[in-house]
Image (cartoon, rainbow, N blue to C red; front, side):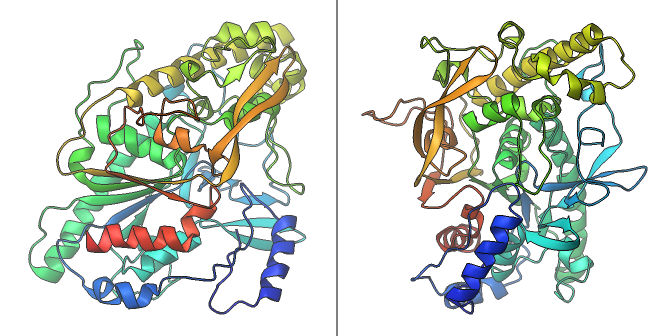
Length: 474
């Protein structure tokens, strides 16, 4: 996204930026927004930010889905992060997860690796245009004195020798959040050794190195699984991993922003109909998205009764028979042209459908297992705090009617951020409007609600003010 500097940008320039944004919208468009009254963050946090203390926790920033650059390791080709041009994303490229019959999802390799947080996307429309994503969040943490390692080492920002207090965790957002939690554990162990060495060099002692996390959207699911299970994978027998809170022992403050803890009906819509990031960018067909295990983890829980049939019955999307009998997603015969591109070595349509069905079944079982693991009620260990920032000002798709042949009808909306409802962020089991207290298995330290959209939350002045207060003053 392009962000307006509200101290220096004129209204006319902001309107011009809006026109550009409409043309190059990627992921989620929230436009430029003028805030008439803002806190003077410099006056509030300058002194706290300038303290370079040995006991101050470094931060790890975890982006959401689409928020990490992906590259093909062998060829160096961009898989995600550069849109358009000769090597735009399409079903013949490296973006889909390969479907391999008989192999567990975690054993499927395709040579694609993460290549940094997507602080900006490059859109190639003749001449490249840069569209900022998480740059504003990283800049805000810089205001707080957190010096990002990647930006410092790249020379993008001159921090002197103080770029060891903020790290970007990039991950392959196509894969299960449980797999990425194991990668996060490796990342934390590596950065702990690095921070400890820097502290010994600068202060003569390292102290106990713990981290704070700021995680947006799907990144919050990675963080929550990591808190509970550390590097444990989902067991192959379908059972739940041992609840050890191994990850929480490395963390002090975990801040989730717009995380779909209860899933997102929009994810179901995309699994059935595909996704088009922008009018100028090639669509991601349903079958392409259907190869990605992570998106199935975003399906709302069946108990929430968010996906309904035309006669009002609850649709259980975690059963592969639901997809095959209703010809949904990967089981839709109309997706066979896409399957031909995804499985070019398979000439028989029936065999292609069999491979796709098996992959679909594995994704659904893994997603149900993942959700059960993070929904398990448990008391958070002492010493780790869990904060939520969520939007509740935008009408957000809540319930969806699905009829035979993927005909979709929006039934209801609920307060949210345009992508994730307030209830999903809280994992609140109540049906609104409802009296009584919140019903959630998550033990929140605190929740803060902001009137902004899904990605806009990360650059909202109220969010930045409150996050810096949590990180610097509590």
